[in-house]
Image (tube, rainbow, N blue to C red; front, top):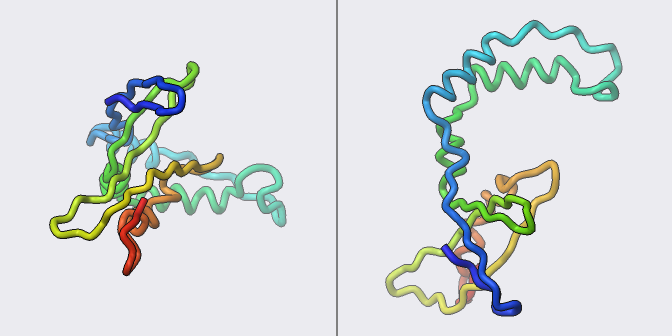
Length: 145
């Protein structure tokens, strides 16, 4: 896929990416590692997170990942939008493209490109809740992102 910048007349090549694809053996290995987690030391009373993560909280997180979290469901959700990687000035950049669906008889006239960036720590997951809404025009309007 080629993406061209009209301002600088240059193109960068990107390639499709499925980095979130977790094969069954990887998921099983993860479950085994979570099962083999060593017992946690008790947190210091009143320390909260002053000396690192509170081990009581960490134990809850590990237990949740081991017994309740659906890794396959989350992977499918993350793969909902096309994903790509491109090298920019030596740095590998991972990005997603979300396009509004073309609907028969739609009055949608204008699709505005929008670049959304997340900070650190963070991920594209921060945008998933609003992406579908942004790709649908508001009632009475003919524009979306």
